[in-house]
Length: 372
Image (cartoon, rainbow, N blue to C red; front, side, top):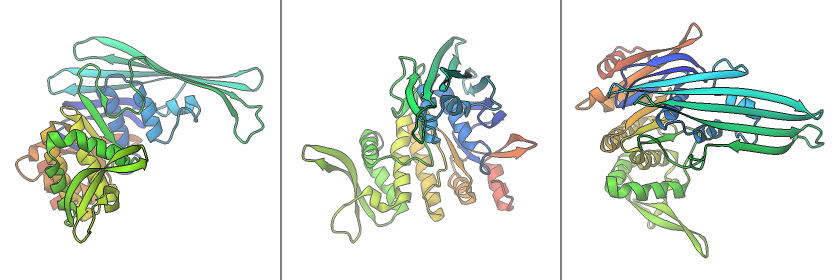
């Protein structure tokens, strides 16, 4: 578990330090203050220089390295980009040891053979481990574009994405720390898991956490839910895929989970994903996405219980006051000490952080001070 983090020259964060981290950390603030960037930086640090994470993050940000110019795609990871840029991410663990990740990027655009453009970007990941050791890996992207093409878009002659041989498929889920073996799971606000992926995760966690807990949490969210179980969707005559079914009141037959609506689907995604990061880290971008504000306290209580059972450290973002209020109310009790609220704000062209423990956050709410 991390006690503090420092992020330098990463995305829109020039130099940001967040101290006094808890088991559950809620990041609040206006748009474009770097909340999601903090999640991504920590994810890169925690999983120990897995270059495929940059590819995954580009995809989630809408940048496909096989379609977008490599120098533009990769440059998005640095604050103040030039021909050679670097970013440093470091985290102090509760053990007193430190992990550090240095991202060094180089960008080159060359005009060869008249109008044929070669765009090349390379990022070197240098990981400094808790034991003082150091290791480096790299990702290289090269795109050859022939501008003489008569089509609306230049013809891509060749795209190469070279990754270290150790890394898994770029869209493997979740990602594991190569050194410590601890996992990290991230749920983006813009990403929805497929029905089959939710069902597969459900099968992995039901024995560990108990399917009854997930059903009870869903029932608190939607009182019409009676039972949740695993079924099959017939895709072809020879192929079926797993799918979750829900039995609800006044419905003669079970219905597919996705018919419950976006809020119920988001809650299930959380409950079947957090246990996959047992002993590791969970990152959730905009937890409230798709969830009605009156249901947020129940969602927070369920997230708290399942994260404690999983012994996972959580980093969650929101710019919803209702979501922040629900979080503070949900932790008003035995586990209040686990909760931290970190407010990010832009001041003098820099991002600053104010951290509240549960007592301070609750007092701030009670006097009506705005801390989004």
